[in-house]
Picture 1: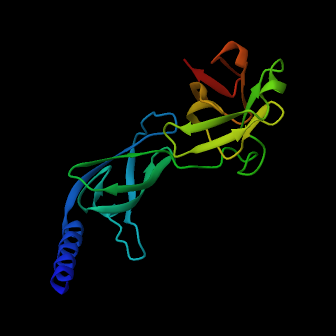
Picture 2: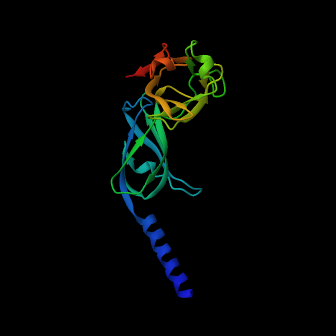
Picture 3: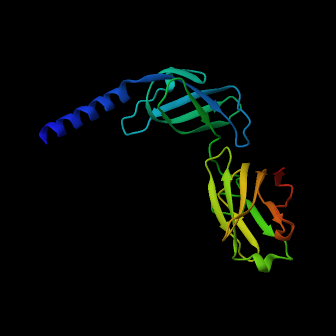
Length: 212
């Protein structure tokens, strides 16, 4: 038993040593919340996750760095136009490519998190009563780390902590997903209206756009 424990500890130590010693090159590609690439950007932080994590941001020339040890990092990218991107990434393979999405931000000064709805999903009045309480809307960010579910209350589901960007809209019923669409949320007070009687058909106001 002692020999077995010694062998296991030796293997663990070798694995940990190898993990910490292996280094690679990293290229970061920043995008906005609609999937458009950001230009004139540079990596300003590439810090190992942990209390004593080392920041390798200084080894980057623009968006490419070399000699980055394998591990988990917090990434920050700054662009000349004032925009930025970032997130957390695990580096575990040679010549790593990191896709960095736009930072999650408050949508507008008048619509802080926890304030007025940014996006409202309405059921057509003709079927609102029949749909209330029996369906949900799930929003999934395509280029944002965002997932939320809203339940219909009197024919409307609201989303507050959301920013402009592209989302997958999924209408959920108890049995299955009844409708799936891509939608762009363009500005606060966006409204999507659908009529279940007409199938998977959405109508957007000026604050949103349905991607066919």
